[in-house]
Structure formats: structure tokens, C-alpha cells
Image (cartoon, rainbow, N blue to C red):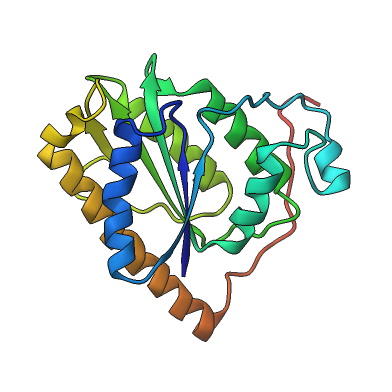
Length: 207
């Protein structure tokens, strides 16, 4: 069993990394393999809407997005962590996720891969960022893992998150729940297979 952990913070050792590390400790207890990807410090251009990926099966911009696509194909679950900027996820992370999820629409069956989002803020904006990140999972048919509270931790300067005992506990609970969900889905697929999938019906509002 494998989890892809994506750090959307520019800081390699900031509070977002610390929140993800709290989850990693639980995953390791269960023997879950971890693939860690730090994208918040990369130069990542947003989607230009060219549609090339629909024909080529990958984005024409040869950067970390195409590398991440292979990792996404191999994992059973995805954790996305982001700092909160103006009540939203880091712009670099958003550019990365837009291209990753759009370019893999036809090439990777993402259904039943478990998704979990984590928001980190000094004070406010966590719930808005949490909702924003979860939309990537739900449009791809990915079950969303929950915890004992919304998946967020609080801290401004690196290390301040250590004082957020409830936030760190929320991360641990999230990891426990995510492992349970991944295992349950694995058993379900063995017995029942994946849910039936219809051909997409695209209905435009303006004709």
C-alpha cells in the first residue's frame, strides 16, 4: 500500500511539512510506503488550456507535473498539504494540481484512490483552503478521508504548530482513518471490483 504525500509549501521544513510528518509516523506504523513530493518550492506554470494532454497523454510542459503523474498512478492514496494564502491554497500548488488532475483524466483511473487535504494557517482561512483542495479529489471519483475535525493545523513561524495539540492529533486520526479506508477499498475491489463506469456525458450550459 502506498501514499503520495504532496507538500505545497515553499518551505521544506515549515509547519506544513511538520503536519505531514505527523501523518507519516502513523503510516509507517502500518507499513504503508510513502512517496514524498515537495512542489511548493518549484517553478510551475499554470495550465494554458491547450488540450495537448488529451492527445499526447501528458502535459507538453516537461516538468514535475509529468513526474508526479506516474507517482499518482502507482499510489493508493494522496495527501495534499498547503499553507493558507489569502484564504486559499498556495498558487504554485494550485497550478501544479490543475495540470496534474487535468492531464491525467484519460490516462489514470483515479477512482477509489483515497484523498486527504491538509491546510495550515496562522489563524483563518483553513476551511476555505480545505474545501478548495477537496474539489480535486471529488471531481476525480476519489473518496475523501476525514478526521475528528477539519484537517487543519495552526502556526505561523516554523515549529509553532507543535503547540497545536488538537491539530496534530487531527493529523494522526486522519492517517489512521485513511489507512482503514484504503484497506477497506482494497478488500472491496478484490471481492466486487471497481464501480461500473459510464461514458462521460458532457452538457454545456450555452448552446
